[in-house]
Image 1 (cartoon, rainbow, N blue to C red):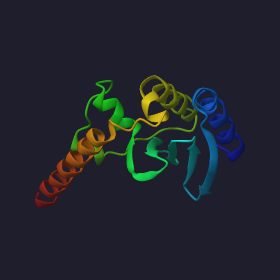
Image 2 (image 1 turned 30 degrees about the horizontal axis):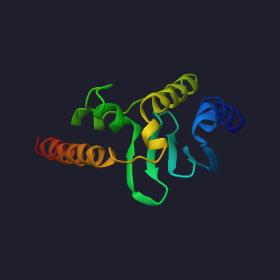
Image 3 (image 1 turned 180 degrees about the vertical axis):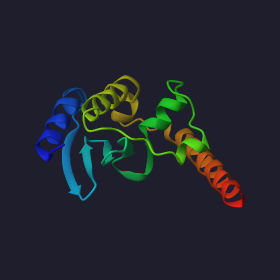
Amino acid sequence: MKKAEFEQVLNQSFSILECRYGLKRVETAFRTGGVTVRFENATTVVTLEYEIKDEPWLLISDINNPETKSTLGWLLVELGVIETPTPEQAFQQKYLSSANLPAFIAKMCDQLLQYGGDLLRGDFAIIPALQGRSQKYIQECKHYAEIRRMK
């Protein structure tokens, strides 16, 4: 996908987030193999990370305290929208074709709209629970990697 096409996908997908929550794109950093796009409003930073041919992901953080952060994925797990990933899944490549990228980004934006309103308004009370899930998962993945190394 060309840069101009990617920019169009971003504009279409994030326009409703801009209208409802004032998220504005403040930075787009293209690099070999990927792109990082940062959106901000008065309280929240939403960062889209995309590595070519991989699934993009959204990081949501407090604009005043960058350590208060988590991902859309962990929010969806916490709310029971998706299943908790297994450690095995962390080591599997998730291929996403450029043809499927626009729909994937649109779905993430829809999920952020549906489930992340509190975060987008600056209420980060759920973040400690999300960070706890993430830390537990990291430990499970390290344990899984150790077991795989021993075999």
